[in-house]
Image (cartoon, rainbow, N blue to C red):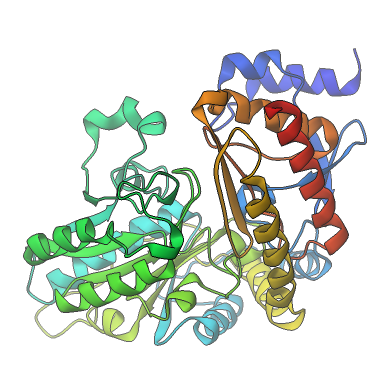
Length: 442
């Protein structure tokens, strides 16, 4: 038995994989990754695999970026952890200033967590306590989009809800009020992008106006509902949402955990929509995908509502052991400096053009139901007539054999390359992707 097979056996004996069917995994010769560099994952057999999904949409700056690794090494020898309740440390101060400088509008107050779900939980709780602090405790509900995905805690699962992921816990959830998803691959109004009037927004507007007196906030993934199947939708939807929230005295939370830090072609998706939310959740690309860290970035108005007066304690009693961890903060500082210094958004623009051109062309392949791209996000859906999810999985397996790692969401295949991918590497990803499509759909 070779080393890789020995490791696989140890893996299936002890490791519980997320979002993975146990039975099928135990029958597969899955890759065992040993190291990574740039846009490549290197497995224990020496194969170099192009990381076509940026390791769950977070490794925006590529693997093992020397600046980030250097910052982690340096900080780990100085200060590994320090409580941030009632005191501070140099790295979290430095990072907070950097985030405030690049965040849209007046978003300048940064609350830290460890992962995306925890930042969303914090944002929900902030929005509810915000209204409680202002003497309006009846404003306690959250509105979200159908198919929304905001993390895996039970509180987050109640936002949007995806049946194939969550039906086993549906009976214990507190569900949010949900509006119709802007699902462009399967438009209920039979519109195309060129004649879309955002008819789907009527459902959201109705949900807000009918529930405004009891609603604390609306939360959406702007421009792309990721786990729902890469549902990319127009920026105008988010712009209209900002207007309706303002008109109805409802806070707007944008979950930019996946789409922030350059993924849409702008630093943040809200910039494409031309709006500023009341709160923005960020994560994944915050540290360049190197260490777990997330944050809620809030406006001054939201923050000021938590100032106590002589009669009322308005402290935000919520926090995590590693809130603002010094090593993760140092990594995030280095990552933000790389985003700003190395023309990452300019390179992302080049990749965006390549993805848009390729995914438009893929529409002509028989068996492709639809395809779309925005920034460094692209998605393609396999027709149910061609096997849908089964075929998508077969295409991903073919791509893996050819040296490209992708992971379908049901019948949807997608490419989310690192933003630092070079032109030749992108050409190789697209060539393997297309070859795998034709091989399985022809």
